[in-house]
Length: 135
Ligand SMILES: [Zn+2]
Image 1 (spheres, rainbow, N blue to C red):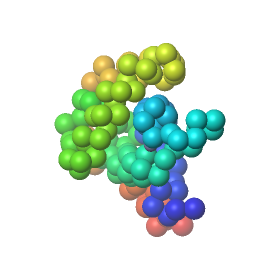
Image 2 (image 1 turned 120 degrees about the horizontal axis):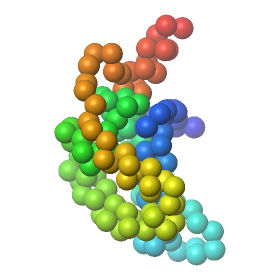
Image 3 (image 1 turned 30 degrees about the vertical axis):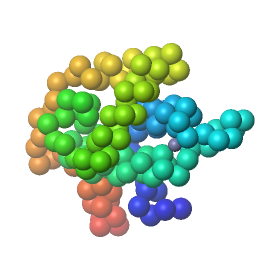
Image 4 (image 1 turned 180 degrees about the horizontal axis):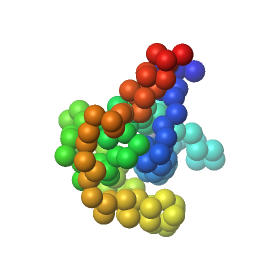
């Protein structure tokens, strides 16, 4: 278990993480697999996935997050941002065939307005910390 990444993402964060994982795996399947019999995410993609998970965990919109495409906050580091765009460009169009339900949900979510931010909205990370402190 890894302390940095072993936590649960709830609400929209969890849905988004599932969708992004599927996209990373589609990309990895095509570009990084040596053993074609059994898919196993490569170390680089696993690391990138953990990065995404940490960003989602700290998203200041919390469970109500807007889609990353619309988000006014740019929370990815430049290099990771470019990497995510490369993955999206490859996997985005394939999602509708490989994971139609996820793809449709994602498209609907993409159209949703950006929610207002206020002090009551906590990131997944802040929520987790609050829970731990109240124990
Ligand atoms: Zn890979």
